[in-house]
Length: 316
Image 1 (cartoon, rainbow, N blue to C red):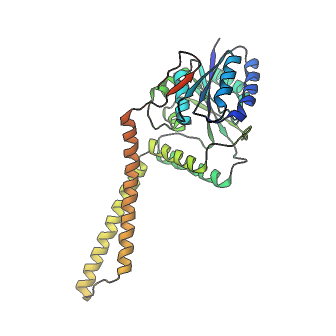
Image 2 (cartoon, rainbow, N blue to C red; image 1 turned 180 degrees about the horizontal axis):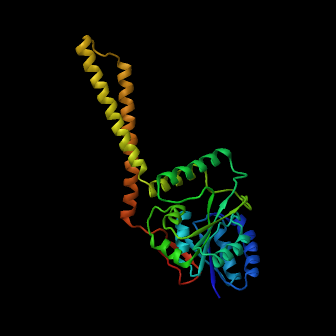
Image 3 (cartoon, rainbow, N blue to C red; image 1 turned 135 degrees about the vertical axis):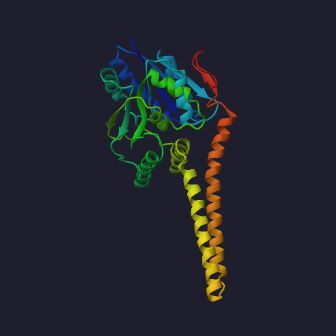
């Protein structure tokens, strides 16, 4: 009997957990030929999420859980899940039911009948999402695929079913600044993309604001591309070239016409422009330097304050 492990990151999801548990119970009953393991990862929730997870763990023999000492973020929650599950197949799912549990039998069938190492899901539409957010999301996928080695499909979800071999490789990639969508694409492996229509949250509100998503996307670009550094370098070269042309123009005008170039306002504009370019380039370098500094400290991705069993790694 093969074992399916599900990783469920949770941050203030008390309004969704009951509905999610009901849907998962139906799937477990339908797939009796498989052994199930559901690992809830409480990411420092401030509501009653942990109490609900404790109750589910006492009611369901296949439910395990771990709770972080504070909010470490979804990427840390996913890494903690990958590090602690034991299944032959492993999937990540959101507790808000935007990753439909009823798709799991289909994903398992594809993985077992076709020559793939993972089956990943993607949304075919963004119904219910603000137009501005959808526009920037599409632009992000175009940009990161053009400037990096990460292969990320537009509309890709974290919801995917993977074989154990792929999960072991993901765990070995212990980098601090994690961007899982990029990691999934960068490590390769044969992936089948399964499309489904967008599903709205079962309850509550999304924890991902526009600015959080923007910060997350910038982290993904910096983690998988050196293009921002190249842009900063070329901007420096361009500014130097323009400055040299301006100096030649001033010298020729002085020698040929005997006139000096005047204009305090224009000089100040040039100085401010060049200063802005320099600060921009320093900012780009600082982002990469900051990521390098975080990697050098080698702090753990997460710290567990409570868990359901002794097999769970407390620090990872």
